[in-house]
Structure formats: structure tokens, C-alpha cells
Amino acid sequence: MTKTPSSSYIIRFNDCDLLGHLNNSRYLDYFMNAREDHLRDFYQVDLTSYFNHGLGWVVGGHEIAYIKPALYNEVVSIQSSLLYADSELLFLETIMMNKSQSHLKAIMRTKLVPISTQTGKKSQHPSDFMNWAKSIENEAINHEENLQVRLKQLLSTFKAKSNLAT
Image (cartoon, rainbow, N blue to C red):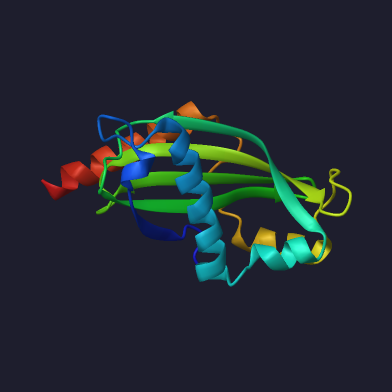
């Protein structure tokens, strides 16, 4: 089972600014939609079933770095990973790259907090959910490092790949 699912998306006209760059706020939508797609397509997880059983999530925070613009009509690749899960938190990382995955465009880290859909209050992940979440946790990425450290690692990796290709 992959811990870093990836899929392709086309940057849409209505998501762009006058220069044809993906609007900064729309990166969040692309990243969150990609993660939902990855849950469905790679793990057969439908968020609706969790909501129907009283479990939902709210965003506790996003941290994002924009590296290179995503352009109108460009095909991009978005990869997501669950970096860490505990009873009161999910910590995700999503990365946007060009189609061939040779250039980094943006990276986002997101904290999700479980809530009860009946009360709207903070909740805890049930044990069966935690067992599943721990099985897909990407331990290859240090979730305790800050975004700038992770960004340097990624840029170094992309540069090394680029050097190998030449």
C-alpha cells in the first residue's frame, strides 16, 4: 500500500489570476481535493461514511510554501501523505509538482482536528480509525521538522534528480 499517493490535475482557467497563475488561495482547494481523491482511489475510504457515523474533521491550520507558479491549463501532479496521526490530530503533507514530477511547485502541511458531526465539538479518533491511520503513516518524513527544513530537503532531492538526468 502506497504511503505517498499521487494523481494528476489540470489547472483550470477560473482558478487563475490575470497572469494565468494559479491563485494562491486555490492551492488549498487543489491540495485538499487531491487528498480526498487519494483516500477514495488508493485506500477505498469515503469520507461520507465517516460523516454518517459522526466523525468529521476541521482544519486546525495550514502552512504553505509557493515555489514555482502553476499555470493555466498545465497538468500538475499532486502527492499526499499522512505524516502523523494520534487520537486528536491528523498531520498531512501535500506536494504539487509539474507533470513529470521533476520540479516542485508548492508544498503544504495541514493539521486536521477530529470533531463529532452531532455536537460540532472536538472529538477523538476511534481505535479502528487509528489502526488504519497508523498503517498509512509516512514515517520516512520527519513530521517534527518545520516546513523550511522539509522544503530544503525536497529542493535538494529535485536538484539531485535534475543533475542525474543531464
